[in-house]
Amino acid sequence: MAKLTKLEDIVSLCKRRGFIFQSSEIYGGLASCYDYGPLGVELKRNVRNEWWKSTVQMRDDIVGLDCSIFMHPLVWKASGHADKFADLIVECKKCNVRSRVDHLARHAQEHTAHVSIETAQKDAQNLSNKVCPACGTVGKFTEPMPFRLMFETQMGANVDDSMTIFLRPETAQGIFVNFRNVLDTTRVKVPFGIAQIGKSFRNEVTTKAFIFRTREFEQAEIEFFCAPGTDEQWYEHWKEVRFKWYLDLENLRLRQHEKDELAHYAKACVDVEYKFPFGSGDWQELEGIANRTDFDLRQHQKGMRTLNAWYEKKGDLSKIELNSEAEDYEKGPLSFFDEQTGKRFIPYVIEPSAGIDRSSLAFLVDAYDEDEVKGEKRNLLRFHPAIAPIKAAVFPLVKKDGMPEIAVKIYDNLKKYFTCFYDEKGAVGRRYRRQDEAGTPFCITVDGQTKEDNTVTVRERDSMKQERVNLSQVKQYLREKLDL
Ligand code: ATP
Image 1 (tube, rainbow, N blue to C red):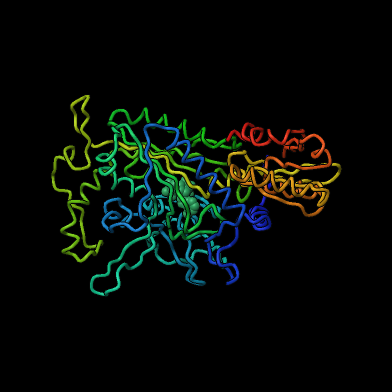
Image 2: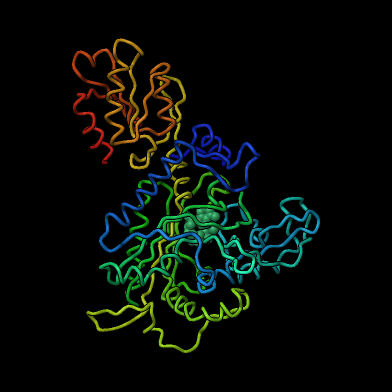
């Protein structure tokens, strides 16, 4: 259905209709940061709400959490991010522009996924005939160097006791470090999950892919804790559940990671991918679903035991080794005692990790359509009603004969239940087109007949069919059609 073939087209549609703007645009913009405009903010909020509804509200085995973005620095040592979360880059000796080694080696498009440092190191042996994308010079690159993707900042006012902390590059670690808290304060028992939506930050090297890859973005993550031995069955469960969640997106597939793509801790990983119509027209990741084994909870048990060393080394993470002394890990503070089997174990974790911005972009691209009405081109966004930014627009046919008064009354009543829009300016045909472009599923028009028989016309966006509905039934009619 999507008829957008160029990234520029989607960028300009987003700007024109108030979905997404460049951040700090009046100052020339800030690279790879974006602001959601009036329609965009509603779209994104709906995507977020749908995710939360299906994962937390509708399930009895998942609870929610909202962790702080700043976390103890040792968290990132234990998780592996402090040492390993980096892209391998080289600098062009002529123009000094830095590029990702894997991108140079593979002629990759801008929004291609990260590879592991080990894979990038293999790629680095192969750059002698590669071209700098900025200046075109061939094979004149510096030695490869790791570029840390986490943003650093200082916390605390005093020079002596301030410390270096990081903006979180994923929300998952906040869940792991609260595993014990949730277990001790709620009725949950393994198997269960903890879900969180929040901002994450990565100092991405390559960023020219609009909101597909940004430096500040929103993630929606579930860490699902289960008994070792049941992990494969839960992994299959989550693959199926998450694939189905993407409403009616066309061009969607699951892609199993090859063995050499897997992170060192992962037993298996699959990506939910969408075929974006622009760029290379490639399948691109919207969400990763990984079997993380018991890696994270074990690592945090080590991290907890490394606290003294952290104080001794004055918080310098590069000088600290995680405490890996032999220990009966299964009995550690992040273990779980299963009363039914009488066994204590460190739970395995299945992690479905989605991007709210990326899926919003996919929903937008997928919804875009063009058709012809009476010889005129019509642009529309065929959003699923659950994510449409505005659910209904209310118009008086003309600005007289008491029609605006009735329309305002309908609008005031409906906006208590749905996001609505009132418009009385210009020809009604033009008003319909504007709402089609915004993806509004229904338009309600008060006309001459309304005063006579208390009915209004309700026009449906996709079919453009109009029905007369009694004023007293409008709310119920929308509820049923929108399934809200
Ligand atoms: P990629 O390889 O494309 O950078 P990733 O495998 O590093 O993605 P994960 O760490 O698995 O991504 O993060 C889970 C999800 O978070 C991704 O599937 C994506 O939807 C989202 N995400 C990750 N990085 C970004 C980013 N820089 N901008 C926007 N969304 C992102």
